Amino acid sequence: MLDTYLPKRYQAAKAHVVDSLGNFSQQIDVVVFDRQYSPFIFTYENETIIPAESVYAVFEAKQTADAGLVAYAQEKVASVRRLHRTSLPIPHAGGTYPAKPLIPILGGLLTFESEWSPALGPSMDKALNANLTEGRLDIGCVAAHGHFFYDQASGAYSYTNENKPATAFLFKLIAQLQFSGTVPMIDVEAYGQWLTK
Image (cartoon, rainbow, N blue to C red; front, side, top):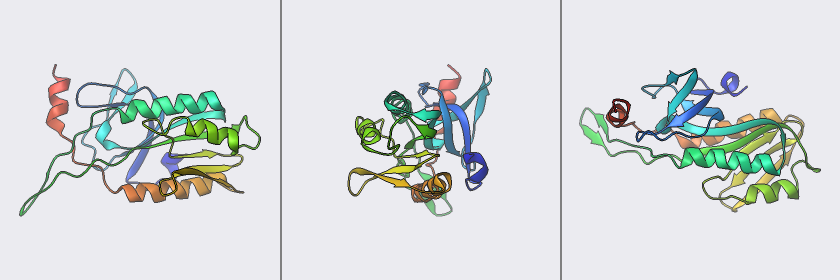
């Protein structure tokens, strides 16, 4: 769904994420990445591999949300956020701009249904709040009920029940992606050194 409806500057795929040191994430169900400024996306043994610097967001996608799935998704998100990312100065006609700060990688959960009743109630909140560090899930959708997002200002999750959860989630995700701006300039030579070892 995401690859169909996101603006064309973004691409979504099932993939592993790699860093310039040769470290890999766990397999991620949906990686939202920058195709326009990513110098390379490659396939190895039928697996898509995306450089860590190109990643905007990662999602675990399953049928039904429960505490086990939330913890599993948090670990998968953390496996991407732990990767080393590079950022180089940006050359221009008059010299160079400083290296762009790394953008935060959004983490999320996509499901059709929830084991909890209410679906977006205290049980989900407890599961989400169990990991607010590397594994924090910033945004997610339970398609039959609504969506959630982590509100940085309040330091708490916000839950919205609605008639068109997938559409509302998509607009919220696009807004957060727009805020991220553009991915940093990748140190391609660092990847070249790792790939030739």
